[in-house]
Length: 278
Image 1 (cartoon, rainbow, N blue to C red):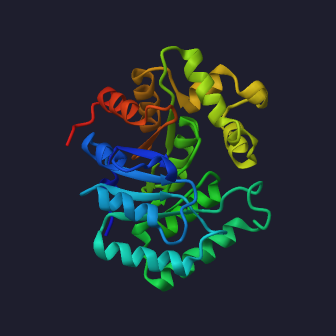
Image 2 (cartoon, rainbow, N blue to C red; image 1 turned 90 degrees about the vertical axis):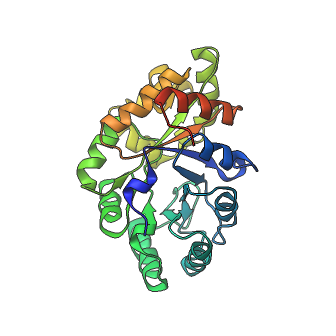
Image 3 (tube, rainbow, N blue to C red; image 1 turned 60 degrees about the horizontal axis):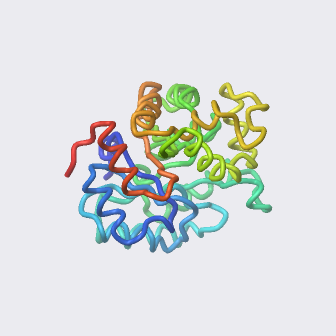
């Protein structure tokens, strides 16, 4: 069994290739409660298992397994195998990806329901899975058939709206953090990182739906847009960004440091938000 409280208030989100050996252990010692394996982990969940093996008690979640690329029977088998070794510490986050990256993507909500049907049949409990969700229908599905939702690249305004749709289900948005000596340096890092995301319709639509003007995406993103989705340039700004999502109704916020000094940035943010060290 996995509970909402087990996620804790603060987590770390990193792409698979950024969870280099030792990173998870340090993140755990810094007091982060959930470690998110970002990107599209393969059905074998080997990267997830590596992070679990390196840590003692944190929760580990995928953010997310792509339903078009990972066979649900294989994912379920991996979940059951890993959970025998690490009971109550694994949550399988699933999502339907992006139309631009998956040409055969069609009827994503139906695909998510069918994928969840297979996970049900194979014995993956609802409280050990969650959904990447931006739109209302996917948020509602997340509340109905999983522990909750993991929105990516959203704003506090979206978080407030999502809380109303989800009811009491888990709401765990992600927030990018770009720490640098100056705001100009931090924004430069963020613009380079966000370039590909600003070409994906589902993210752009979610941002514009909740107050971002289409003109703000020009030239790599306005300063206001960059600051909203990639808190910078210092730990105090990062803490304020996390706090804005929590005040809007998030249960948990996963911090994604996008600069080069991942562990240093995680330590600075942990100190700024007041995480109790292990």
